[in-house]
Every structure is written in structure tokens, then in C-alpha cells.
Image 1 (cartoon, rainbow, N blue to C red):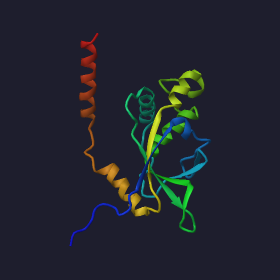
Image 2: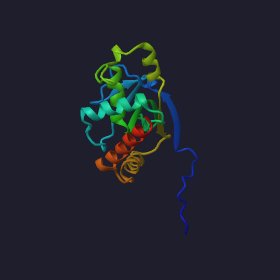
Image 3: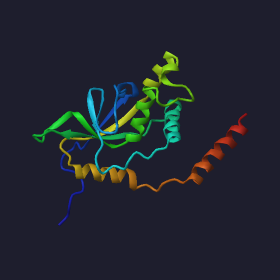
Image 4: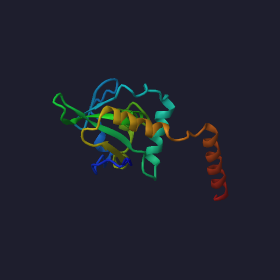
Length: 182
């Protein structure tokens, strides 16, 4: 007997784009449950702890500001209420909690952008940053927490990780190209 590997419904993921300004939090607390754009963001229990060091958050924010390519998406899942209905006001962050936390810290003047805090940046530069697109994917409908955890594994553990040596090789190439184009 043959088994289908394609889901029988045609909408498991919804691709949504919003600007960084639209996820600007209002005192979002990632230690538990926070509030961003009127919705609560929850962190599933299978996720790892917060592991980024301070320099990683700063590097991420600096790369967001200068990015000419699309940013890496975050993955979300609607929570279910006590009657097992989709609760559009609550979302689990399946993947991307460190990136979201970095953006929130930037807006809260807790993380510098090239050495300057949000409150010290010119309004036109703030608007430019706010308009950056942060794509995200929603796990659609009543997907189970098992399906969400499987997505987390697929997104985070099916790639071969790059090493520090790989990064150094790319940085050396960039430096060499800049020297030749001067």
C-alpha cells in the first residue's frame, strides 16, 4: 500500500510578512509570557534555554540594520484555548526567540545598534529600521504540539552547521575583495 506524504489539506503554513515596527513590543517579557502587537508570545517547553551571548545579540541587530537580503524567518503557532479553538491572540514561538528578543531589546534601548541606543538614533534612521521586513511562518490551524516540535527539529537540526573556520574563510574573502576594489 502506498502512503501519501503530502498533507491532505492544502494549507499547513501561512507566509506572513510584517515590518519590525509591527512587532515592536510594549514591555515584552520573554522570561514567560509577553505582549507584542496585542498578542501573547509563548515559548514551548521543548525549546532550548536562552543561550546567545551579548555579542551575538549585538551582531544580529547590526546585521538586521545593514541587511540587503531578506531576514531569516521566525516560525509561530497559534495557541489553542480551553475549548481547543485557535486563539489568535496567543502564539508560540517555534523558532526565532533569540532574534525576536534582540529586536525587542533594541526597541527598549537595551541593545546598541553600532554603539548607539534606539533613543539616540535619528528619527529617519529609526523609520528605516522599523520598515525592515521580518518574515514569519505560521503553523496553521489546529496543528498539534508534536507537529510544532517536529518543525522545530526540522528547522534547527537538519542542516550541517557552519564552523568558526567557515566564517573566517568568508570574512577573509570579503576583506580580499574590498582590497582589490579600492
